[in-house]
Length: 83
Image (cartoon, rainbow, N blue to C red; front, top):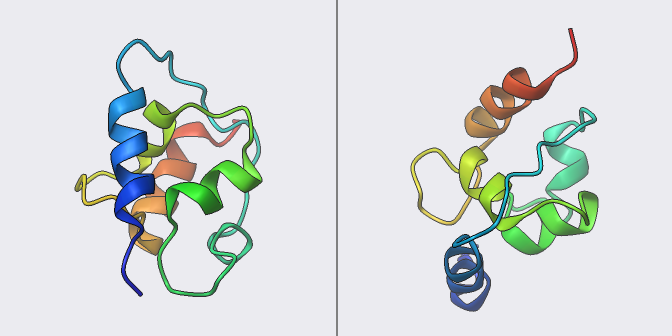
């Protein structure tokens, strides 16, 4: 499934001046990938983490392609998982 270019553009435009809002609770990839496409898009991320900033999404999207893969998600969750 192709990502929504509008969502990606919005995330990139809003990053300027946004403070990072770390994800505070662990969510399995499948819980966030609501349409089961195999990637997490901005709108899915925002639905699960409504207070998160676009910067948080882009931190998780390590290759900056506008999508979060399962591998990127697990790495991101490791960064913010409580000790």
